Image (cartoon, rainbow, N blue to C red):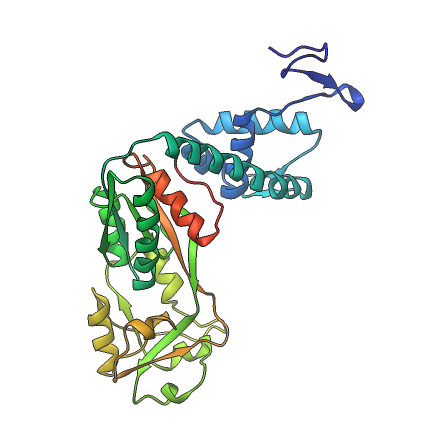
Length: 323
């Protein structure tokens, strides 16, 4: 219980104007950081498994402790105030370091056994998992890591059906019960064109060139993912047409090689999937293709957190992961 006598960890005092200030509780920090990321009370509540009212009450209590507003909120949007942004930027590294230290201590004491199954959508992600699995297995010799190459849509289904415990795939992912964690790899985006097309001789292409030939798309992906990789319009508003869709990567390349259109991939894909009938042309200015750790919101079997931390060690990332 808090007291005003200056002794013990519950010490509080009265700041300027009689505002009661003191040590911030862990749940207040977690609620603030979650809302700072989501900028949406309902999603934050779902993530923290509390009610939106509880989120609102916790934020208001924290703002009273701080002495000012951390969020600007109305019926249409939630945004951080300048003080809120400063607090987030200064709190987040320390919070993640604490989480990492606790998870490492927990992992060091754990005796994991069994098999962890990891899905990946790109060979360079598979390479990362192989390296992480070697480090992980040295620390936990009774637990093995199995790799499974999957398409994006199959990766999400495999997570949902518990056929894999962790995946590295391309965001965005908007699926109930699925958590998108940190980005662990980023690759330069490329347009894959038929070898005989005039764009194949260019050093780079622009996003406006997406309107020059149909886009061969991946079948079964979400609308959000399709919009991110296969937009309907160029940045200047020129319409982009869709060609045929393919379920697998090799089928997609075959369609491009046959002159049915172009598709969006990464420059690095050309190192792994080179063919004489297609050319990978880098974009001169386009967002990178990110690859993120993805898991079920239930956390998965014992050892998943330790494996996530191992991947993050190899990529020098510091994000949140399931406890």
